[in-house]
Amino acid sequence: MYNNEKIMLTAQDIFEKDFKIDARGYRPQEVDKFLDTIIADYTEFSAIIKRQEKEINTLTSDNVKLKQEYSKLRSRLEAAGEDSSSTTASRSAVNNVDLLRRISQLEKVVFGRNE
Image (cartoon, rainbow, N blue to C red; front, top):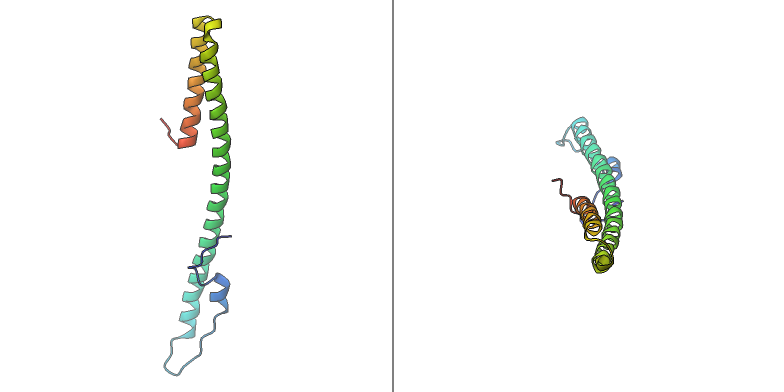
């Protein structure tokens, strides 16, 4: 789960809290109803945080994989540029165009551009 030192209460802490009843105090039913709403919010916040942490981990992993693939393709592209003297210009141009398209697609995924 999340680790934040500024969060002082959990849903369970709120649920288990008992207030002393005073002759001039609040209506216990109203307090309980309000605390139930707060507990529901805390529970939802906790679920949202868990989902987002999972999504962050997935996206981070995907990002690392795509950067590695990008690096490999970049190296291939550079190697193809060095080897172009031994191949025909048209074949090299086609390969370079294909590689540039693939790199462009990877950049869109990695950097979140949908152009």
